[in-house]
Image 1 (cartoon, rainbow, N blue to C red):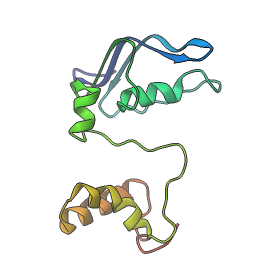
Image 2 (cartoon, rainbow, N blue to C red; image 1 turned 90 degrees about the vertical axis):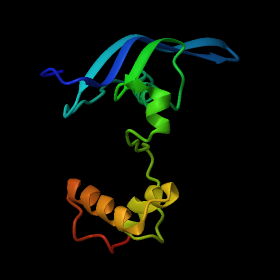
Image 3 (cartoon, helix red, strand yellow; image 1 turned 45 degrees about the vertical axis):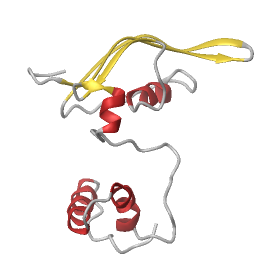
Image 4 (cartoon, helix red, strand yellow; image 1 turned 30 degrees about the vertical axis):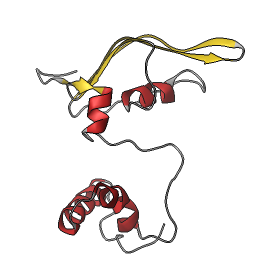
Length: 139
């Protein structure tokens, strides 16, 4: 982490053990992680080493069994409830009958944002990923 800005993600001694029919499986063990604002981070490792599990804990889709985690200065649960971050699943989840802008805007529709706010956010998001000009195209 650089500078004095607060951590966007901070994990301390984070652990997660899944209970299975064959006994406990430790997916995460004693993970310490600090990600600052504007940092670009990659989790690299072999299949099954806990990369996706860690992301799911950060997104509050899994609850850790030990340690602590904060996202944007809140618990992961509070950050999820306040929609303080975005999470993109590994598998594509596009609707082929919706245009790119309508696919990107779906969560905004569900959140009940005004059409004007949706339009602004969609435009900004598509610009971030260099898809401006493709709004009316289909996936």
